[in-house]
Length: 397
Image (cartoon, rainbow, N blue to C red; front, side, top):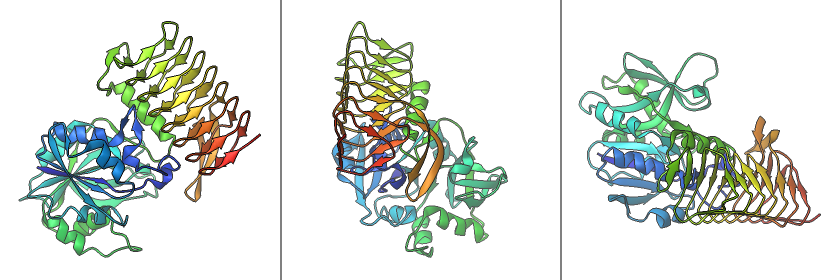
């Protein structure tokens, strides 16, 4: 089979981390989320990967080029983000015969992809999808199942009735494109689930197979969810390119001072530096060329590429984007906060701070739990941050 990966969306609820890159390129234990999706497809022996790109598309092209682990990649563009069905429609003509469809912003176990690929019978069913049991299924898209077939789709289940999580792993053939064309738009958008709802609701003799499967499935809805994603990947040992010892992964080119302490699970990427008497971990990942200065403490945090933490800083449950500069003596403790996101308030979230790409904290700064700082903001010496700081803002004491 070929495969189509939907990677055109912005990920609005993950702002400000997505102010300058798409959600599939956010860090998941030191690698972009999208790389795990590609790994699962390569493990399933797909012939080629068609990637639907749109928002900040060059980040994906520049990172992955035209092949991934010897599997060809073709890019098609969704110029306007008008829903998952509209995105998939852009791949018409790029696939031949039955094909897999995956979301580019969710990490799924390779065995899920293989299970759907193996179970799909084009002559018997219109399509197939992976269905898993998940403790938080009601937060995501769910399905009801009867006798091995999907009978209904639910984007936001409104009651406590048990539903099964739609894992976002599909198999179809070219008939899907005709079904997409025949589906009315809602508020100008076309979603894949709305098309599939019409199919199961029309009494088709060719149903959508529900392929019950299991394995790791993780998704980041909000910026702080990247902490959970990283922790799950570390717990599962899904760390590549580095040597493992007692749940500590350190790249060959990383430098960790003899007096530093690494508390597992922890992953230190290529060219990262951990200074004297620094403490890193548990549940922490340092991206390529990240630096943690002398006597600093970083725990349950995600630091992306080129991010630097100064001496004597203390960070707990912090998500920091690319090229963030956190000055000496900065303190970001974790706590419970109500955080406004995309027009609503997410209540009772435990988090430290979220710092988008190229934020500069000039030293001796401090953050209230739940503080959110936008791309390129500059926080002067000794500033205390609470709530949200907008993109490119300069804050002085």
